[in-house]
Length: 444
Image (cartoon, rainbow, N blue to C red; front, top):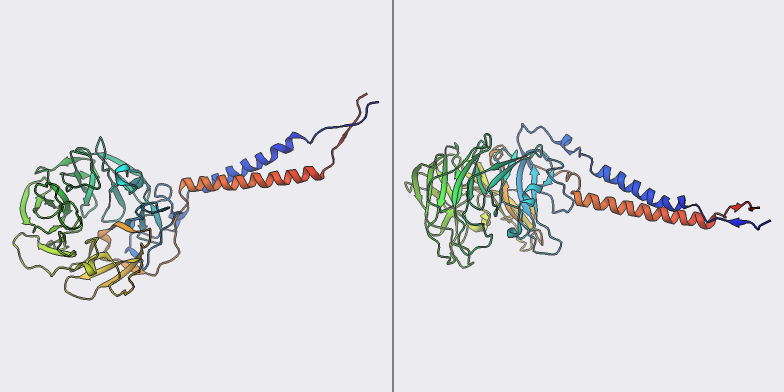
């Protein structure tokens, strides 16, 4: 009779850790990629928009519009500049009906190498329901309209050269004025950005270039949407316009044109001023806001929109306006700006303030604090201008950032699955050490 022999532990036990780890990984991955229920918490968007008295801090965990739409937005902005370690610029949409924040991943994906990490050019519609995103460098110019309540995207080819930069929405949130240039746009040029103005009808998809010189740099729709104010600058020899060596973007004229491009009148722009973006036109159509540049001390000034050089309000100095210009109008004689708190005496205050400024000399009204200090500066701040007249300010509530961005969710699933694998291996090895081997009947 042969002596008893022993077999090693069953190989099935060695496969158990991989099975457990894989199962946990699959379960976590499935759960993290389930549709978010955040939309169920969005309030009725037919009423007045609201703004918290303090916006959320920068976070790596903010979800995307495409996976969890926030509903109509009261503001979009860039958080972070990408110049410090672990500071990744984010394009943020802040909902108008709750403390809901999402990353506008479409804008982030359309920012090419020329942006040095910044998002692609975008513009929030006056009603806050959509944002339109263009590109600084593109072979076939196009604009993409993103619906903020569904995440739906609509791509619109547009005529132009090597870029398509949205400049302004019409007040009814249907038309988009855009800039296109013959050459790809350099974000950090020595010469001023200028080109042709086009108009896209987002309802029909029809787009056309307006006639006129190829020297436009900015545009703003009139309050009734029937005209455009186009800032045209003269020839640029590349010489800087001010002590900061910024490209010259002042002077020239503001051409008031009908939507077919027919010029109605022109407003002369002094050499130290430039049109102050898409919200430049006052609600009553009487004023055009302009930025004070070229060593003029900064701030916001006003021109008579009729071109008759009539009386205008006193300029608003940079001490109260900051450097972001007019974001919108909260009333016929009140503009919204982004600046440091006028009452703050702390030079290290890391808060920007959304502030309403009266054109009649009344005290500024700080509305909401915007965290933006340290590595996480705030830029390209835009508001849904059509929602401002009835805007309500409320106490900030619990922040909803939605599901984590896809890469973070996948990484979390990998980590949790890996931990489950390690734990399962430890358990199996302990059992193997404590379990005696079963004897095998001798072979005769």
